[in-house]
Length: 605
Ligand code: M6R
Image 1 (spheres, rainbow, N blue to C red):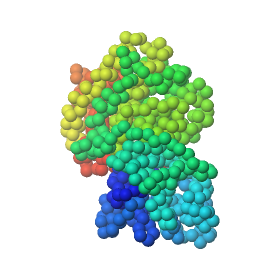
Image 2: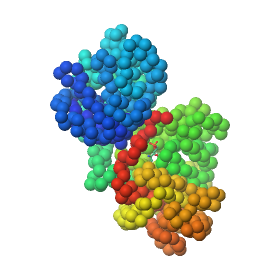
Image 3: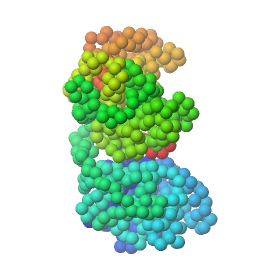
């Protein structure tokens, strides 16, 4: 996946586009490029590597223009290189294109174009598409019709911006299963993969639909339907959050800022959702309490789902199955029945596998519910009902506050359905809600000391080449999350395991240089976890025990975190795991916000 932006207005366009690309860099960062209107034709500059490389090239160009577009890439077709970087130009130099997504039938189209004499300089599907537009321009009346004709032939997912040499000051854009948002300013207009790209200039946005084509200039915009080029009107919405939310705000990294935002995320998530000891989830009032719930997600969102299952089964007695979206979408889902509810969790709301799983669930006639963070995202729009988390923009590639916000919503769902089913006593529900309301302040006070401890431990363990993360019950998904964070940020191999499974094989790996991070919280599983921890220590394994005051554990390192009752202790354990990974990666000099090989939202299969 990649980030794209287009601008037409009165300002110097290239700096506006470059600033936007910086805010989109989380979507991909292996190469970047810009295209801008020149006195004669369209200028294109591209560079391999992060945006800094492109900036260095731009410094020696006089790229003065009022209309430009840009791209930051996460390679899918063709290795990261300048040759494969976008924008791509048609053979006749009449069209220039940036693209996020995959054109699935590009090989077929390429063969047909090659037979007609087209020459390709990159391995990308994008270069094929821009030449297909050029080919259609030979017979279609204008650039718009050529653009639409080419898109009708292309199969796959895309968000694209196109510049035509003969229409300076105009940007065409289109969307099919990849995010694209219009930003409407005064005397200037924007189109981008995500709102922060243009948020310094406008909060008026239009979420485009699949099959929308836009013609954008400084003075206005038209939205047309791909199938017949009929006009449509889409109402603008006003974005409430401001640039502050999308900036580092004095922190060294977005990730650290986002970890420290979790108390606010919890407070915002509770606001308007709890009243007089009860949970309000009006979005769910019209849906029956599910007989069976299937939760589908990827990565960290999948870990939230696994964690939520413990609460949904315990508090609401809802049979819950959790699946990885990339598996669910291709499996014979025999268990899915008409009155089942499929809950699809995704921070971005654009993850390709999760979106596909949602569509599969709909084909089976199941009810669908989305739990998303990004307003107007594909999953939010395609689900029959949607709940939004209140995490605000999450910029760091490693997901942190989004998980906290998803866990909160899952806890609220379990309490809500528990009440509707009458299986959770009023007193118990009220006590849990009262404890939930204390969470923001407890965390706020605990985070600085947690960071301090995380830093101390990171210095001691940063040289480990392997790590186990062990937990039981609801701490097992948290162990999986701890391991994922360590892997993706510091590139240390880490495995999350159900502590009780260790003796069935993995314990063979334990030796004095293979430490284990054990979640030994003060809950009903503690005695079992302590036994599993002792089994590791008996094999000379070093243990970091994450635990609560008053718990008697013997370990190489003991890390005390605030004691929250029952499942709510997960909200205190999560930031400890995040901070340990953050501090370890930072100490090792890794690129915390943009780990190698990754991108924020995985919009390809
Ligand atoms: O946007 P989504 O929640 O659908 O994203 C799912 C995963 O791609 C995401 O959680 C990923 O695993 C993160 N890099 C984890 O930090």
